[in-house]
Image 1 (cartoon, rainbow, N blue to C red):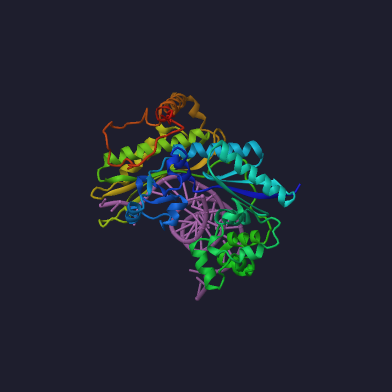
Image 2: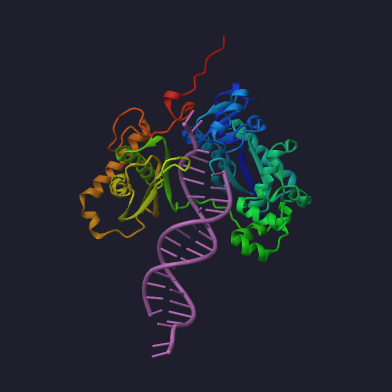
Length: 427
DNA sequence: TCTGGGGTCCTAGGACCC
DNA sequence: TCTGGGGTCCTAGGACCC
């Protein structure tokens, strides 16, 4: 049977998550901040209406926040991740083919039936998610993923459609596309918009009708594919099988600048530990590790950034091995006299466990086996009692300069027994 | 005082080989 | 006096996404 795509996208996801446990905030402006309480990464509709831009540094909207009593939250990824899983589970209960595209979006494929049935079905999906999880979603339906993205945008913006918009059998499709700016197309960013505008291509409809050779030349095959998708030719298929990641990155800006190598070392150890945990969680190993340290882009002081890539002897998922390599690297990267603001680690050369042929002697080394047991125990304890219950070589000092600033964090309502919401009887 | 983090894909250009 | 061409692999950087 022929299928169409539907894109299910949670509305203002992080803000909606925060509100779920604070019904008193319904109808009020809410924003959620990036790590270190730096930038605005999510806004409720009321906050959008106040003109708070996406990605704006908090200090630039302090005035608006104070004036309109905007409720501000630090990001709480444990909460958002858990609610995301719940949304995806509801989708999987109803549909076999679900591609989780990001924390707040999923593509699904629906059989082609009469349009009325599709919209009715989508409405039921939406209602189930609202009832079972409590998060509002919008659903866009179309014959390609790129068009489904556009349909979703219409569903979200135009209240009369009740969160669902179907472009799949819409005879007015060109009229819809003619009203949307080309920079709103999935895959068309700032640079491409500039090029397109210079060629008098302003709307999605203009792009749909653009000359293919020109697009191929100036926007590469990626752009050419987008144009085909706008013309209803599906080039991007549904990826519903989880695949091996190509890279795993853990990096953080520091809460305060760091100048000494001891604090840098602790930060790197902590990031490598997280990266190692991610490897083991997905059952994969990495054979290459890169680390970087850098001063900030907004700092007046002298800037310095450097990175180093190390090829490991064996693919590994052992935090012990990764830390050994990373610390060696850090020693050669570090230069005294700078105010460091960020560090990170990247793991590449990732293969699923046991895929790569191992060094014949590795099995004879007692450390490999012992390390495996150690990692298993470590992960089990940290998953039960919270991520930093057992850590590598860390001082127990309070307020380390590199640790994240999160002054307005909501409780981990759904993932931590200590922070469960309490229901009290009225009166 | 205060500016996030984690990914993917594509291309150009250099190194290297025959 | 003469100084090719083609293929592959790797990496850095650009662009984009959420």
